[in-house]
Image 1 (cartoon, rainbow, N blue to C red):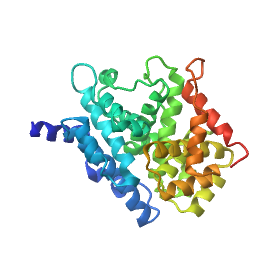
Image 2 (cartoon, rainbow, N blue to C red):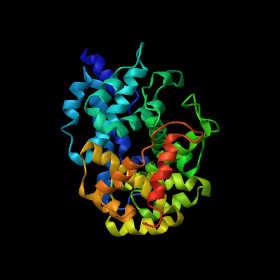
Image 3 (cartoon, rainbow, N blue to C red):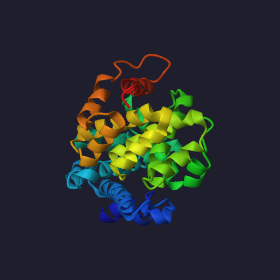
Length: 320
């Protein structure tokens, strides 16, 4: 049984060395940001390993809860991937992610859904039907995770080559054209890592993308800059200024990060700095914006997830 658990831990997951910035070829702003980003990567893989080895989700949760506050959400993201991979590779109905979300993983629901997107990038497409993402509102976060993975591990193609899938086949009920936009949000989030938290480098990368893609890219980067951190306050102000017309998108992503941190009870000082800069308010206040704008229904041609994002961004018009 232990050998099976060891095999599960090794299969389909990157080696820890692949999270090193020099191995990935990512930009390094300074040693402090480099250490932070590599610790984020290591925390993700720690969570994946816990999920791969655990006999039950509760056993994994006990270990996940001991990860330091700043990095625990990333460990739950990794666990979401690990349990999703286990679900995808076994016969029968998926149960591990469902069990995680029914337990302590519920507080980290956003990160778990993103982790399922990492699994999507690693398992065969014919097994995507085994991926558990039942909430029609949050389901789109799976594609955010997919986009992050592709930008992180296939950087030349997705970031510098600006590749976009012609018609992404998930979710089956569509709308398929919206899938590209959420994948771009994940690409934007990953670019915060690719650019080494250097706001000048990140904005240069975004400037090379077609203008119609930049709002989603900035939203993703705003989420990463707030949730993960890595840039001093003066740099965040410059990021907001350089975002120009995309400031509200930066604020929307920042508010999403605030909501995730507040729900999980993992607010750290760098979160407060970022939401003050991007949103003009505390992390708790920014999270409340995401709560009061939550869509009440799924009807309409525009996905509820996008209507939610638009409503959040509208709250920051004139504020940032």
